[in-house]
Length: 519
Image (cartoon, rainbow, N blue to C red; front, side, top):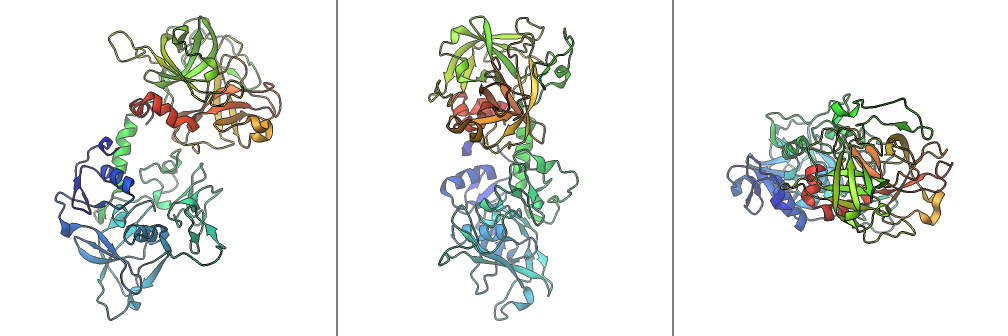
């Protein structure tokens, strides 16, 4: 919502003359109308300082008006992403540009008086107007220089024999999976096995432009575009920059991520020894944890017995499987930092359940929607539900079902039928309908190995399947739900896919609870 945007130091001026306290706020308002709003940053939002774009000449040459006066747009950095923004935002063509080309300055119509300076622009493609892109200060145009041309899209006649975008646009010009948003809805950069022409490949199958790598903004879901030390293609913040809306995004994200309270274990506690004896394996690949190693793992105690696990989301919330609980909160207690199932350690916490929310469409026969939230009782005279504990940390909640992909390695943990908490690495498995046919339903995820060496089993239910992204943050990707023939080949474990239920989790825990602990 617009009012939730953080306040920035400089005014954001809009096309109708209004002033907002951040570009985030202006964009939140523009998002609702799908109309361009942002004009420029400035102390005084004067009409003569507005940024406007025109493509009104016969050659479709792009002109941009700023406080410097009317200028051309330089051919350098010009591509379909920017051309789409021009056609969508300035000319109202929903499907953007047909092509982005360049024309020699010398070849322009001599009967028209053209500006002798141009301004470079660099767009991601999702902007509503060219003003939202990064714009550089004017530079002189030499006789051999090229300037930008944007020809807007017209519906073709007949069948499209090229790439068809999700928005229905026929991609006559441009190449899918090159990091440039040629479609105008980025659909040509999705589901890519690799990227061509210098595009950067995110693990989620998305190609992003090379100039977005190491620019201080996480564009890939896992943040791997900010970890590529070999690539130095950074948008430099220099004096020649006229407008850099991305700088506000960097500042907001940096501030938000500095307050991140999920997915990062307390490493001083993670490998601390306490009453730890020799290790043994439950199944091949399973190993004992150290006593305070998995800091978001909890045990669900039902009338004094522990048959299920769960995972701590932060605040007063625990996530588990629906089949592990009943709508009788007084029967349940949640145990934090438990290592031996039947013995407390110095960091163990014991919290009573206040309420239990089972997914309204949970089906006990099919295990559809096998997910539940446990809300803990607040401590006396406090809004907290557990004391500060160095051995307890919250895991992050994933918001996109594309954050992790088949063949990614993740970690499961649980007590099984034993008494000591154990962990194992498993692989995410795609196309699970092959193994379970119609029993595999939306909202389910498979993991393990098809040889049956590592699998979740009875006693692990409700426990977490945790995946770590490229930046080192841990997300609860799955909740142990069900399995046929535990540990046998071609019967991988089935998990509730948590990202599928992000909105459900956020609805019940509240926006504040999710954003505070899971940025």
